[in-house]
Length: 158
Image (cartoon, rainbow, N blue to C red):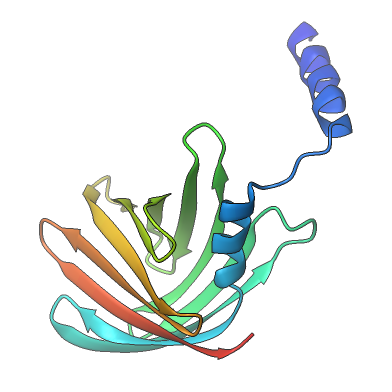
């Protein structure tokens, strides 16, 4: 009972302070907004799809909806203040949870890790790299022990 009172008090104290995303993180999340078409290779097989990103009310994270040859997925892109990483957490129709954690390496490159949690208890680990080609296109490459994925995204509209 005391712990819930402390949580309420802490949330009131933190809620009163004005907090904003760091400008570099806000720019990375803003880049994901709009409609995109994707094409690439998923384990050596051609794959096509599309996704849309929209700011959540309050502009603290971006909600992502994707549809491709691989199925449907919904994600949230946000910021981890403890590690200063951009994090995308996706859930797909195969009931997998996919987490991408990026460090911003430069104005055009984000690099990090990839975790895939399957409903059968298996976990896949790998690396991920996103390289901005322009304001209208980027390439994501993900590598795991058993599969490599390369996707090129082109903006359809903002």
